[in-house]
Image (cartoon, rainbow over all chains, first blue to last red; front, side):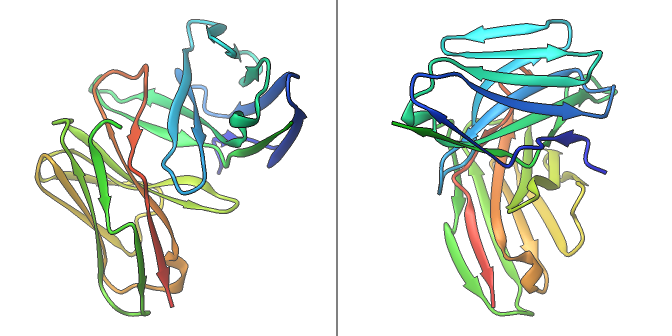
Length: 116
Length: 113
Protein backbone atom coordinates (compact mmCIF):
# COMPACT_ATOMS: atom_id res chain seq x y z
CA UNK A 1 0.00 0.00 0.00
CA UNK A 2 1.60 3.20 -1.18
CA UNK A 3 1.34 5.84 1.51
CA UNK A 4 2.92 8.66 -0.47
CA UNK A 5 1.76 9.08 -4.04
CA UNK A 6 3.11 11.16 -6.87
CA UNK A 7 0.68 10.43 -9.66
CA UNK A 8 2.47 12.36 -12.39
CA UNK A 9 5.58 10.50 -13.57
CA UNK A 10 6.69 13.50 -15.60
CA UNK A 11 6.07 17.19 -16.14
CA UNK A 12 7.35 19.51 -18.84
CA UNK A 13 7.29 23.31 -18.55
CA UNK A 14 8.80 26.28 -20.32
CA UNK A 15 11.59 28.27 -18.76
CA UNK A 16 10.24 31.18 -16.76
CA UNK A 17 6.86 29.59 -16.15
CA UNK A 18 5.60 27.99 -12.95
CA UNK A 19 6.18 24.30 -12.21
CA UNK A 20 3.70 22.62 -9.90
CA UNK A 21 4.49 19.17 -8.58
CA UNK A 22 1.85 17.33 -6.60
CA UNK A 23 1.91 14.73 -3.86
CA UNK A 24 -0.85 12.93 -1.97
CA UNK A 25 -0.58 10.87 1.18
CA UNK A 26 -2.83 8.43 2.96
CA UNK A 27 -1.31 8.11 6.43
CA UNK A 28 -2.89 10.71 8.70
CA UNK A 29 -0.05 10.18 11.19
CA UNK A 30 2.46 11.87 8.87
CA UNK A 31 3.42 15.16 10.42
CA UNK A 32 6.44 16.32 8.45
CA UNK A 33 6.85 16.55 4.70
CA UNK A 34 9.89 17.11 2.53
CA UNK A 35 10.82 17.50 -1.10
CA UNK A 36 14.04 16.17 -2.53
CA UNK A 37 15.63 16.82 -5.90
CA UNK A 38 17.69 14.20 -7.70
CA UNK A 39 19.98 14.60 -10.69
CA UNK A 40 21.14 11.54 -12.66
CA UNK A 41 24.03 9.64 -11.08
CA UNK A 42 23.74 11.62 -7.84
CA UNK A 43 22.00 11.06 -4.53
CA UNK A 44 18.80 12.94 -3.68
CA UNK A 45 19.35 16.33 -2.08
CA UNK A 46 17.05 18.11 0.33
CA UNK A 47 15.06 20.97 -1.17
CA UNK A 48 12.38 22.20 1.23
CA UNK A 49 10.23 20.89 4.07
CA UNK A 50 7.06 21.74 5.94
CA UNK A 51 5.63 20.78 9.28
CA UNK A 52 2.00 19.76 9.55
CA UNK A 53 1.32 22.75 11.77
CA UNK A 54 1.92 25.03 8.80
CA UNK A 55 0.22 25.32 5.43
CA UNK A 56 2.98 27.08 3.51
CA UNK A 57 6.74 27.32 3.51
CA UNK A 58 8.76 29.42 1.11
CA UNK A 59 12.43 29.40 0.21
CA UNK A 60 13.42 31.57 -2.71
CA UNK A 61 11.84 30.24 -5.88
CA UNK A 62 10.45 27.19 -4.06
CA UNK A 63 7.20 27.11 -2.11
CA UNK A 64 5.54 24.09 -0.57
CA UNK A 65 1.84 24.13 0.22
CA UNK A 66 0.16 21.66 2.56
CA UNK A 67 -3.56 20.92 2.64
CA UNK A 68 -4.04 18.57 5.57
CA UNK A 69 -7.75 18.05 5.08
CA UNK A 70 -7.12 16.85 1.53
CA UNK A 71 -3.89 15.06 2.49
CA UNK A 72 -2.21 16.87 -0.36
CA UNK A 73 0.94 18.89 -0.79
CA UNK A 74 2.42 20.65 -3.74
CA UNK A 75 5.75 22.17 -4.69
CA UNK A 76 5.73 25.38 -6.72
CA UNK A 77 8.83 26.53 -8.57
CA UNK A 78 8.67 30.07 -9.87
CA UNK A 79 10.24 30.94 -12.22
CA UNK A 80 11.35 27.57 -13.53
CA UNK A 81 14.89 27.31 -14.87
CA UNK A 82 16.54 24.64 -17.06
CA UNK A 83 18.77 23.72 -14.10
CA UNK A 84 15.65 22.66 -12.21
CA UNK A 85 15.28 19.69 -14.56
CA UNK A 86 15.52 16.68 -12.26
CA UNK A 87 13.46 14.03 -10.52
CA UNK A 88 11.57 15.41 -7.53
CA UNK A 89 10.64 13.13 -4.66
CA UNK A 90 8.00 13.87 -2.09
CA UNK A 91 8.65 12.33 1.34
CA UNK A 92 6.78 12.14 4.62
CA UNK A 93 7.62 11.11 8.14
CA UNK A 94 5.95 10.31 11.43
CA UNK A 95 7.79 10.69 14.67
CA UNK A 96 8.53 7.42 16.40
CA UNK A 97 7.27 6.97 19.92
CA UNK A 98 10.78 7.56 21.22
CA UNK A 99 10.63 11.07 19.81
CA UNK A 100 14.07 11.26 18.27
CA UNK A 101 14.10 8.93 15.31
CA UNK A 102 12.03 9.02 12.18
CA UNK A 103 11.80 7.20 8.88
CA UNK A 104 11.04 8.82 5.57
CA UNK A 105 8.52 7.32 3.20
CA UNK A 106 9.04 8.42 -0.38
CA UNK A 107 6.82 8.77 -3.40
CA UNK A 108 7.83 7.39 -6.78
CA UNK A 109 9.09 10.71 -8.04
CA UNK A 110 8.20 13.14 -10.83
CA UNK A 111 10.63 13.94 -13.62
CA UNK A 112 10.55 17.67 -14.27
CA UNK A 113 11.88 18.95 -17.58
CA UNK A 114 12.26 22.70 -18.00
CA UNK A 115 12.65 23.63 -21.63
CA UNK A 116 14.67 26.71 -22.62
CA UNK B 1 28.31 17.03 0.94
CA UNK B 2 27.87 16.07 4.58
CA UNK B 3 30.66 13.50 4.68
CA UNK B 4 28.98 10.36 3.48
CA UNK B 5 30.59 8.05 0.96
CA UNK B 6 29.46 4.82 -0.61
CA UNK B 7 31.63 2.11 -2.08
CA UNK B 8 31.84 0.76 -4.62
CA UNK B 9 30.11 3.20 -6.97
CA UNK B 10 29.46 0.51 -9.54
CA UNK B 11 29.48 -3.25 -9.32
CA UNK B 12 28.54 -6.12 -11.60
CA UNK B 13 28.16 -9.50 -9.96
CA UNK B 14 26.82 -12.92 -10.83
CA UNK B 15 23.64 -14.46 -9.54
CA UNK B 16 24.21 -16.40 -6.34
CA UNK B 17 27.31 -14.55 -5.20
CA UNK B 18 27.48 -12.55 -1.97
CA UNK B 19 27.88 -8.80 -2.24
CA UNK B 20 28.62 -6.19 0.41
CA UNK B 21 28.07 -2.48 -0.04
CA UNK B 22 29.67 -0.02 2.32
CA UNK B 23 28.47 3.31 3.63
CA UNK B 24 30.90 5.48 5.55
CA UNK B 25 30.09 8.74 7.32
CA UNK B 26 32.27 11.28 9.04
CA UNK B 27 29.43 13.20 10.72
CA UNK B 28 29.01 10.97 13.79
CA UNK B 29 25.29 10.71 13.09
CA UNK B 30 23.41 8.11 15.05
CA UNK B 31 20.91 7.09 12.38
CA UNK B 32 21.79 5.48 9.06
CA UNK B 33 19.59 4.05 6.33
CA UNK B 34 19.81 1.93 3.20
CA UNK B 35 17.37 2.60 0.35
CA UNK B 36 17.04 1.18 -3.12
CA UNK B 37 15.77 3.11 -6.10
CA UNK B 38 13.98 1.37 -8.94
CA UNK B 39 11.97 2.74 -11.88
CA UNK B 40 8.31 2.93 -10.96
CA UNK B 41 9.01 2.41 -7.27
CA UNK B 42 10.88 5.46 -6.11
CA UNK B 43 13.00 5.06 -2.99
CA UNK B 44 12.24 2.14 -0.71
CA UNK B 45 13.76 1.51 2.71
CA UNK B 46 15.71 -1.73 3.07
CA UNK B 47 17.19 -1.52 6.58
CA UNK B 48 18.13 1.16 9.02
CA UNK B 49 20.29 1.55 12.10
CA UNK B 50 19.72 3.61 15.20
CA UNK B 51 23.10 2.97 16.76
CA UNK B 52 26.05 0.59 16.88
CA UNK B 53 24.75 -2.97 16.62
CA UNK B 54 21.17 -1.68 16.59
CA UNK B 55 19.39 -2.29 13.31
CA UNK B 56 15.88 -2.91 12.07
CA UNK B 57 14.08 -3.91 8.89
CA UNK B 58 12.49 -1.65 6.36
CA UNK B 59 9.79 -2.39 3.81
CA UNK B 60 11.94 -4.42 1.38
CA UNK B 61 14.38 -6.25 3.64
CA UNK B 62 14.06 -9.80 2.25
CA UNK B 63 17.37 -11.02 0.86
CA UNK B 64 19.38 -8.32 2.62
CA UNK B 65 21.25 -8.12 5.90
CA UNK B 66 23.09 -5.23 7.54
CA UNK B 67 25.72 -4.68 10.15
CA UNK B 68 26.95 -1.69 12.07
CA UNK B 69 29.97 -2.38 14.25
CA UNK B 70 31.11 1.26 14.31
CA UNK B 71 29.21 4.53 14.25
CA UNK B 72 30.76 5.52 10.95
CA UNK B 73 30.16 2.34 8.93
CA UNK B 74 26.91 0.71 7.83
CA UNK B 75 27.24 -2.37 5.63
CA UNK B 76 24.57 -3.84 3.39
CA UNK B 77 25.01 -7.49 2.38
CA UNK B 78 23.23 -9.45 -0.27
CA UNK B 79 23.84 -13.02 0.88
CA UNK B 80 23.08 -14.54 -2.53
CA UNK B 81 22.47 -11.92 -5.17
CA UNK B 82 19.49 -12.27 -7.51
CA UNK B 83 18.58 -10.37 -10.67
CA UNK B 84 15.72 -8.68 -8.81
CA UNK B 85 18.34 -6.98 -6.65
CA UNK B 86 19.73 -5.10 -9.63
CA UNK B 87 19.18 -1.54 -8.49
CA UNK B 88 20.74 1.69 -7.36
CA UNK B 89 21.42 1.64 -3.62
CA UNK B 90 21.55 4.79 -1.54
CA UNK B 91 22.81 5.20 1.97
CA UNK B 92 21.53 8.08 4.07
CA UNK B 93 22.29 9.64 7.41
CA UNK B 94 20.21 11.88 9.62
CA UNK B 95 20.62 13.91 12.74
CA UNK B 96 17.83 13.99 15.30
CA UNK B 97 16.10 17.00 13.81
CA UNK B 98 13.59 16.48 11.03
CA UNK B 99 13.72 19.85 9.33
CA UNK B 100 16.31 18.86 6.75
CA UNK B 101 15.61 15.16 6.54
CA UNK B 102 18.33 12.88 5.36
CA UNK B 103 21.63 13.42 3.63
CA UNK B 104 22.19 10.85 0.93
CA UNK B 105 25.32 9.34 -0.50
CA UNK B 106 25.98 9.28 -4.24
CA UNK B 107 24.70 5.75 -4.64
CA UNK B 108 25.97 2.35 -5.74
CA UNK B 109 24.74 0.96 -9.02
CA UNK B 110 24.58 -2.82 -8.67
CA UNK B 111 23.94 -5.11 -11.61
CA UNK B 112 23.32 -8.81 -11.01
CA UNK B 113 23.78 -10.90 -14.16
